[in-house]
Image (tube, rainbow, N blue to C red; front, top):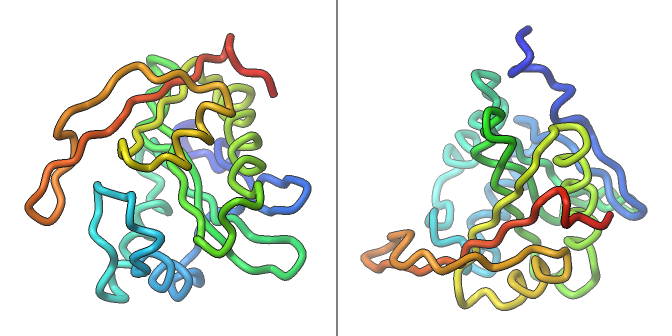
Amino acid sequence: MTENMSPINFPTLETERLILRQMTLEDADFVFQYFSASAVSQYLMDEAPLTEYAQAQEIIEFYLEPEGKTHNRWIMIRKSDGQPIGTCGFHKWDKRYFRAEIGYDLSPSFWGQGYMLESLRAVISHGFEQMKLNRIEALVYVENHRSIQLLQRLGFKQEGVLRDYFYLDGKFYDHSLFALLRSEWKS
């Protein structure tokens, strides 16, 4: 196994209330139900909501694919009842430039309870400490105010707006670019 494919890069993470673990094919039911819900996908302008079960399996297989391993997605499991409540992880990990893009989503019934803040603190710490990242970027739909507030609370700075960045269902969508540097991180 090469360094790029080592599972050590993306181990199970634990927070006070959550377990963040790798997706497995056994998660296909959750992934399908979750990403086919319009409330979950309302701000995910890079992909349409899932309409077929096979799409959920493809998502999981993508994240399980060891080739190059420049991406990861943890499923957020609530410790109190073992319920999956969302996902988070890294995309576009560029080891040469010590940077990656963070992505996350949460079931609306758990919004406003601090779960994503708790998860992202663990994920960001992992990125800076174990993955040796210097820069973590986030692309957020400009109307996703909750996500923007979350990033700002974590110390991310807005660097600009990417006009007409994603195209979905016949329409272009602007996204804000946020970034957090290792030197700015206060775990």
